[in-house]
Image (tube, rainbow, N blue to C red; front, side):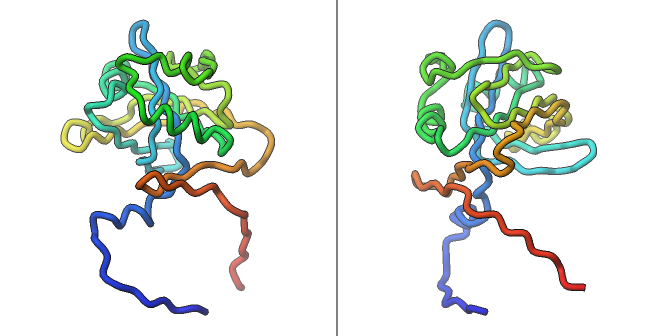
Length: 180
C-alpha cells in the first residue's frame, strides 16, 4: 500500500477532490420558456423515496423557473457532449435558447412538464420535495418520480468537473467483493 506526502491545502478548495460527480444538464420549463443549465453540485439524499439535493445559484435563470414550476429533469450527458456541457454552462438562458443553440432535442416527459434532453444517456424527471433550504442555501431537494436510462452501454463515459476548467472522464469500472 502506498503512502503519500501531504501539505496544507486551502479548505475552500477541498471540493476539487470531493465533488467529481457527473456533470448533468438540468432542463426546466416555466410557462412557455424552457431552459438548460449545467450542474455539478448535487447529492443523493435517500433511496426511497429517491431524493436528490441540488445546489444552484439564485442568479441563474433556471433557479426562478424551477422555484416557480417546482419541477425539472436531470439529464446525464456522455463525454462526447463535453463541448455542449461547457457551452451550456457558459451562456445565459435569459437571452439564449440553449436547445436551439446547442442542437439538442426537447422531448416530452411522462410525469413533469419540463423536457427531457433526447441526446442524453439518462433522464430523471423530478418534482420539488422540500424547499426549506432553498432561500438560505439555494439548495433544492427533489424527488425523482420517473427515470429513463439507455440500455447500452451499461457504464457510459461521463464528464466530471474538477474546477478551473479541468474535467475528468469516467474511468474503468472495478468490482471488488468484500472478504468473508
